Image (cartoon, rainbow, N blue to C red; front, side, top):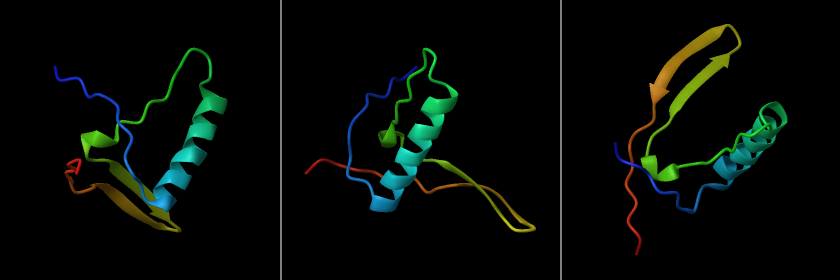
Length: 69
């Protein structure tokens, strides 16, 4: 098993705002003994969306790599 070590990266403003909203929601729902930790270096996410009556199937975002300069 490979462990991913947490690191801080520069994120798009909209992603950072959405993350802050989710952090607040998560802490309100699951604050007892749980800790939310983001691991951006894992390089992928799963997106699910519903727009009105149209359901968009889950999609995996493309992998991206980041190398410190």
